[in-house]
Length: 266
Ligand code: BTN
Image 1 (cartoon, protein in one colour):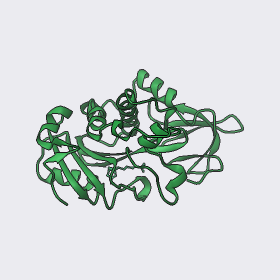
Image 2 (cartoon, rainbow, N blue to C red):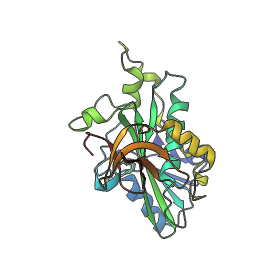
Image 3 (tube, rainbow, N blue to C red):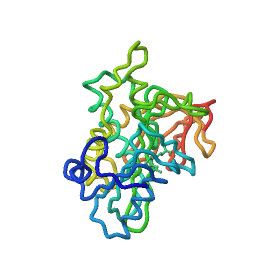
């Protein structure tokens, strides 16, 4: 684990100002940027504080899963102040990630069908391109964001379920224009644009709800929730719950766990 002076070709000491945050640490490889961000707390670091790394060897996903973090992805964690964990935080961050992807790729090409899969996945079509892991302690939260940027393929179980911006932008092109892929630093800057506003209010505003429901990749589809509930996806509410309706017409509110398309593995 080596602290870097240049990250993505830019001087790290300039990144904090460019990203509008108080502190940035960049490393070649770390176990998990979320862990590094928690360590900043004991150093009395001003917040928001950001940690980025080129690779992680113990990257974490939600529900105890490992997060594959080779070179080519944006692996970033932000330490923010927050009084209590908010169920809408990962949703709000998901919107920021979608905005970042759409803005930073707009000059290069068009990524078709970017969507959100409640509560924290960013999809291109049916495949996951980014994930968000929020961890909260008493007065702080670490928001961990992983975006697959330049990877050209995935192994094992990720082969069919994951994609990268490079793969999405170059699908079907004979000679992929690799040099024109979005810079990790630009994606990070755009994601972090409004990070001071992430902690509050505890409900999504009507504009956020509308955008989220526009991007909802589950709406109208047959779904199966972790708790066993089955039904059709109806969308996200201001309090962050996802609503499905069962065959009998009852509305079920989902607040924790995950949702899968019926017949797909969790
Ligand atoms: C998920 O979809 O399950 C969440 C994935 C979150 C991955 C990011 S990468 C940066 C940060 N550090 C980690 O160890 N995890 C998050």
